[in-house]
Length: 160
Image (tube, rainbow, N blue to C red; front, side):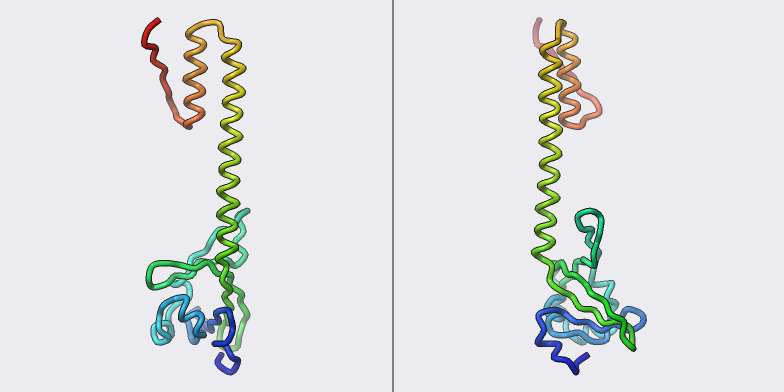
C-alpha cells in the first residue's frame, strides 16, 4: 500500500488480509483510531467499527469508527478487492451523519406535532358535543392517555 502517497491523501486507507485483519494503514487512519501502527497490524477491522443505520434503513457503507479515547467518527467505507485481501478507503462522514440526525429529529418533531394537533382537534369536537359530566371525564381520560401514550389514565373531580 505504501507505493502510492497514502499519507498525503485526505482519506484513510487500510489494507486488510483475507481474514479482515489490518495489514497496513495510512497516517489518517492511525490518527482516526488513536492506535499506533504496531497496535493496528493484525487487528480485525470489524473490531474498530459499528454499522450506522442511515435514514430510510439503508447503511450505504456508513460506519462508526472507534477511537481509543471512547469517541467515534462516522465514515463511509469503500471496498476494493486486492491480491492479498481488500483495500478500504474511509471518508469522514461527520457532516452527513449530523444532517441525517437532524432530519430524524425533525421528522420525530413533525410526528409529535401532528399527533398533538389531532388530539386537540378531536378533543375540541368531543368537548363541544359533551352533555354529561361522565362523558367529559371519559374524553379527558382518553385524551390524556393518548397524549402521554399511557395504558391507563384517570380523572378525579374535587367537587360537584
